Image (tube, rainbow, N blue to C red; front, side, top):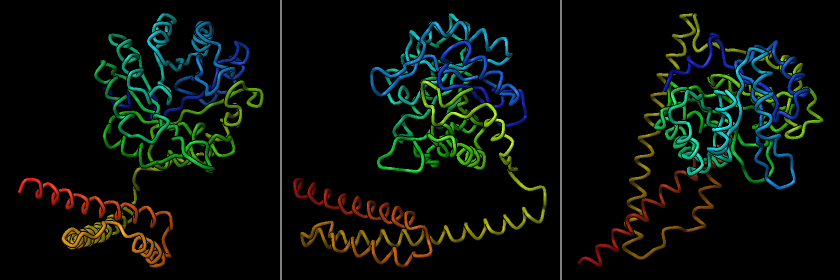
Length: 360
């Protein structure tokens, strides 16, 4: 896999921009003219659009490959399109397009990913893999690995958020911890953020884009349309070309580290203190789990259930009171993780006890 620096020639974050769907030559031309001043590295265009329900606009289809490629070539910017099958790959290669992305609804299906990866073997195609719709790191990582094994050298990932339950601020939950872990696993791979699909609302795209840059993403993939309100798909989240330029001008590009030695020394001191606190936290967690093992031993010996709901309710209430200065969601998640580990350890003890009874 090529290093992420191979994706663009500029010493800056990468930019991919363009309409959700290439609806007509005129719409695509007008959008291109508007976004070219932003100097995009790639122009995105949806040719086939997987939709939730039948009867919705599903893209112009293969006939759009010819004119989108011609117009992108005239603009001097490579075209990027989504593929979801081996047939799509064949049609894209025939049209001379060399950049594709794998959509979230495709990444979720290893059979489809493998079909596309096999179709790409031996080609010089560059591939961007969007995360699956579900917050499943292994599915995303597995899709990347399938393209690696197929010999795709120019490979990257795009974070577009995850489908959640209930009403949230964004269309798709960012769950930033998942792309951060993907970065740890594939440290040299290009990883972009799609703030349009995370936000779902053009008014929220800027804040998501800024967060992505603050988390050291390598660039952005932003949907732009000459007339978003009239767009045939994802009208609420697309920016006008002018709004895209304004967004890019407002983004703050922070440094990885300070050039001030005093600032770096202060940060190092604080990190050393954090290391000390973390060491104590780990030690306390080990002490707590040792107590959990002792409790499990008593429960197993005297046939007491692993879970007592009243005790768990009390833990939730008191610990959240103790942590009143912290984010309540954080405290709750932490307690759930600790409680689940406690249950797992006691359940394992019970299982071993049963096995011993059968073997004695």
